[in-house]
Length: 287
Image (cartoon, rainbow, N blue to C red; front, side):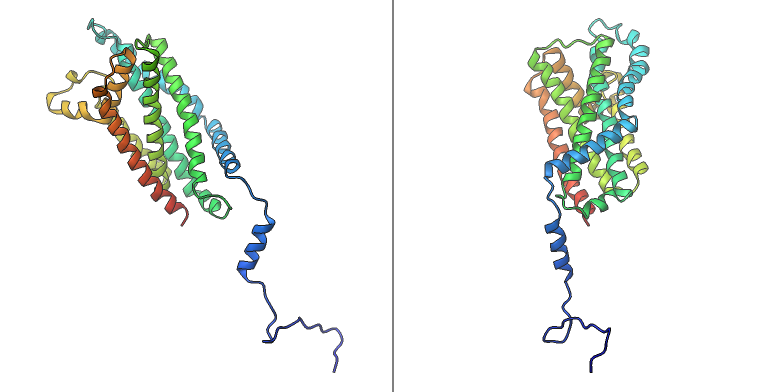
């Protein structure tokens, strides 16, 4: 008996109406979605980071930080240090001004990664058809731009103070290669710590304090013999002192493999730590 107004859905042999599976739906969505090149994704996220960097005033601080450091240390200590006829305090201070600019970039890198984690941005990225490494590489690009700007500002500040590179062109290139390499490695390490952290504020403090202590207990501001004898071995061998020593040797043209070797090994150690922690951070982000 036919009932008007009632339409039955077609059924299969089992008597159950066919229903699209979730995998089929995903396949249809994926096929219908235009593919985006990985480089375009990286560039879009890097541009996003650069816009945020400008909006947050990080570039302004990159200009201001070396100037404040020069005012706080160079002006008060110049007359004391220049009393030694063998001391050019502007040249002596140049490495630590550059390395302190690196520390600013590291703090910004950690904050940037931690904010992306805590605000759910990394969770949103997981739903998009992009390689899992793209967000990390985009932050690396943003941090690299900020690092270059910071190092340029530090070099200009040092030039105003009176620093001049006395080595060859190759030595000067090596000088900036050291600070940029150290800066990139520390930025990678800081980015990984930011991914692993659940608090941007705690991440920034946990990173800033060790850098501050190592900077003050280094040969960056005063020579090793100005420290008490019991702490001189630590001051002499810790990484910031080794980086500063290598940069001074490259600046005045006296660099040798023996002088540069500790810096090379410290960079290798930073690279290994950065790779391990970045892997752990990406693994956490894609969960």
